[in-house]
Image (tube, rainbow over all chains, first blue to last red; front, side, top):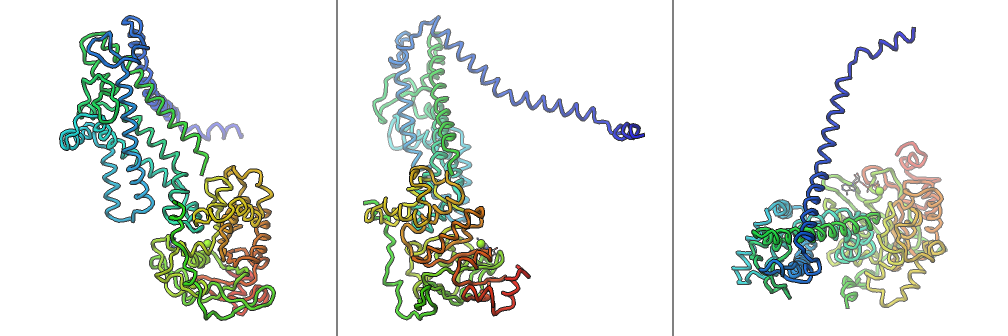
Length: 299
Length: 284
Ligand SMILES: Nc1ncnc2c1ncn2[C@@H]1O[C@H](COP(=O)(O)OP(=O)(O)O)[C@@H](O)[C@H]1O
Ligand SMILES: [Mg+2]
């Protein structure tokens, strides 16, 4: 009697096809999520094989690669000048964008009244973050390289990259500041601190890991940017820069330059350069993740 | 020197002291005391909503004054009027008078930062800074520019002892204040509030987020604090008010201060029927 009712209770509900759809959909979205991993793996494989061929068949010596500057003669060409230029570029970019970026974020989060002007600024920041990087290069070319006659120097490139990373720094700093609990701010005010003391001694230290993470990620994006540097005129320079006022070619522009050469030797020099550039990018991303994990339990 | 600059909003002591304060209470040992905090016709609105309605009160020195009442009756609002923490809330509008030693703290020449250096505050949810225990306690002394004038180590120890926390943390002053338990964090916040030696300490339901053992430690502490400070404590726990306070103010819905008297009188023989109903649990 009871088995009979159990048999008939759910038999009118046919879910076989629904469950199958469920599984199919799951398979599709899983494949989609693998797409990024596979693409990255293929990319790395391609780079690695070119790198290997460069080292073996073209006898590119890593020692020479890191100790020589670029040259029009392929067998004398190295990456040192470009590496030094990129590091210098990152330092100047960081100096230019960090203080302005964090300052803007502090103003917007801690001081700005909630009015039209503030909302206008925030909307424009979102727009700025979406501007194609070549436009920053054009701006730097028009305003600094030609406008005030700076010439195609490293500082001009740093200005273009600084403008590029500024929205990233501002937005991530705003998020970090917003994540600081209001209870902590109130605790500071109630202890007789001024606004600035509260920001400098409590809010900023608490937000600093988030700000640093955003800044490093922004710089990791800037170090691979090619278009703005080409606009600024950082091409066909082989000499190592000795200061921000020297002409320069950074890692991505040197790679771009080599890859456009007809000679296979130059093309494999570019492959080795790409490995070095990627190593920089991965190291910076790892540093960002490290900073985030190390401090995320705080607050 | 940077620290000198930071201590800039110095309190003008003279402007906070007035001459014509009448004695309105008796201290713990019987001698009359003058009110430290007084409110006259105090109205507070958040936008269109009224949170305090015509509050008049004289809070005596060196005693524990409890503020009780149902949730939403304006207890926290009143407390935030005293140290002008309401300034942080854009929609908040204050009319009437709230005086500290007879000086209306909402007068234009009063700097709220200077006011808060005389009036410490402890919040409902413990809110230590993400800094070491030592830096938490030293914070007030540092921002108030006193770090160079006093022996900081001694001041930190004194404040931690005053907050009954020294014995538990003296070997870990460099570890983060966030690593402490909830009850310890709240005592750390009390230490932070008393370290710069304010005159008044405001406490907004300081034990409501804590377990009973931690809460009773803080209750014991409050009793000691009244020897040196004027304590104003908001609580919605009537037993707590009865246990720890000398005077009790009862706020009821609409932001009205219905009755303010000696604590035993409020709990045993209240004048107002609504207070009696509230105390005996008939509403609220
Ligand atoms: N920041 C605020 N903005 C708007 N309204 C508020 C704010 N804080 C409190 N109120 C309102 O004011 C009234 C009193 O609140 P509060 O002082 O927090 O009461 P209590 O502490 O007695 O529970 C409540 O009706 C509350 O909704
Ligand atoms: Mg409250």
